Amino acid sequence: KQRLIHMKFLLPFLLSTLLYSADSGVYVEVYFDNPDSNNLKTEHSDINYEEGVSGTVAVGYQMDRWRFEAESSYSDNPLSSIDDTASEAISGNLLKMGGLANIYYSAYNDTQLVSTVGIGIGATNVEAGDDDKKTAFTYQGNVSLGYMVDKDWTWTIKYRYLEMKDIVNEEQAFSLGLRYLF
Image 1 (cartoon, one colour):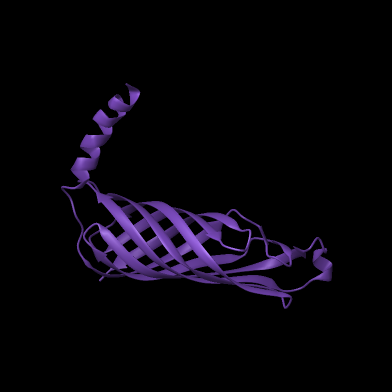
Image 2 (cartoon, helix red, strand yellow):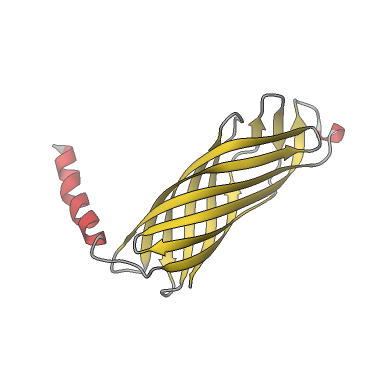
């Protein structure tokens, strides 16, 4: 019975989002990422790192409620330990560079807010100092809430869950981004 009550409220909302749409076109998006993870494990190493610089750039095509994009991510974090070796004994940074293909679905309404869900797949290169280099299959899922300043500019807050196969690194991140639709 409780599901029926939820559907009475959810169904009109979902149907109302079908009444509104967005302009189509090419867009560029830039994000500052704040991941909550500070360690990862490869088959050879247990790597701990400190917070550093992390960001994402994407280019895509928006087609009404659907978006298709190519994303490139970069993070550079100071190493704190590898296999429980103290930071004085190691030097360098943990570099992660990834590329993903993403698909998003957005729900618009009569306000300037837009909610989006998306998935993506690709690869990430991980380098920890000179000792460990690995390329891993990567997938992600995310949800976001955007504020459309006008038809071209949108500020976005995004939550992303990203996982790399063969590397134990389940990364959750909150991001602040800006998208421009040409």
